[in-house]
Length: 204
Image (cartoon, rainbow, N blue to C red):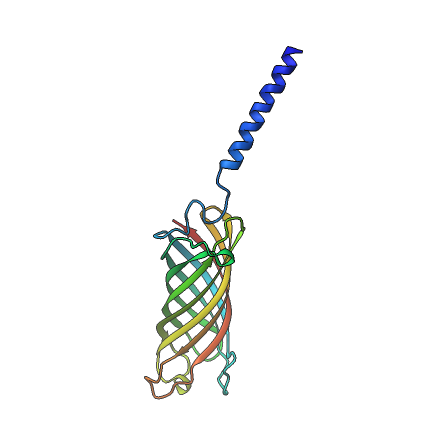
């Protein structure tokens, strides 16, 4: 009987210790252990497919194109405790290059600076985000419509990350992109496209 009582006591003490450790241990929330803290980096490689014209048509020709991209993100601030909008801002520099799979052209390439807001909830398996950006680049789409090779780009996007391990996430993103020469060329019809990006991000 003493042995049985001792066994019960040992089991109870062990169970209590395990429970306390579980309560005190940080949850695998995706702002732990601080990957969204100020000064942290995010590296992303991905691919996107765009389809146009979108919204503003005005007899614009069809240009559907695919790009590969690489970007580096820098966390601009720590996570703000704003309830459902809990999160932080991230600055991103992106390089992209690709080619049309429909339309009379051969290449496009450029860079974009993005400002992203991450919606970081400690118990979520998914981290949504929204972003806006601007940049410049080159494309050989028909000069008859677009005036010159040099073009500016404006963009907006929203998407989400799904973490497959603490420092690695898969991204799915909807994007809108506008490209034009801002009236620096003889013609400036502009390209308006929407598309989807799939990527993978590593946090450091």
